[in-house]
Amino acid sequence: MWDFFETVRHRHSIRRFRSDKPVEQEKLHAILETATAGPSAGDIQAYRIVVVEDAARREAIGHLAGEQAFIGEAPVLLVFCADPERSAAEYGERGRNLYAVQDATIATTYAQLAACAAGLGSTWIGYFDAEAVVELLQLERGLLPVAMLSVGYPAELPELSSRRPLSEIVEHR
Image (cartoon, rainbow, N blue to C red):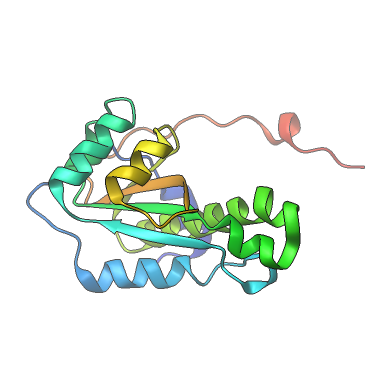
């Protein structure tokens, strides 16, 4: 098993998935458990994770995400939804407007790293019509889709993308 730093270094955005190899339910369960293990404001986990395995729904969501066809080709799509009212009940407006989104994106990050550690590929999707996704998936009122992960076995290993040097990002004071 890779250590954490190797997992982070080997994570790539995968946009081509093997159609002959579905994600095993044990691996999907482990990814979901890992996602829920992340920190959240007050440990209230103000988010929901919707698992979309139906090919027609994944394809439709791909159309709602700027014609990103790989979404339909991946065997699993995880839709991470903030639950603003759950957070607002404890933290008011800051919980509604910020903490719920942070909670959902932390869960997304943990899921993405868990997928990599499990030998799967994924892509974080942030560009999509959130209202149309709510309607298509018939989500509970008040849930806000904030990120999605396509998950499956990679059919490609893209080149590492360049990163800005720490000196351009980090400030010491």
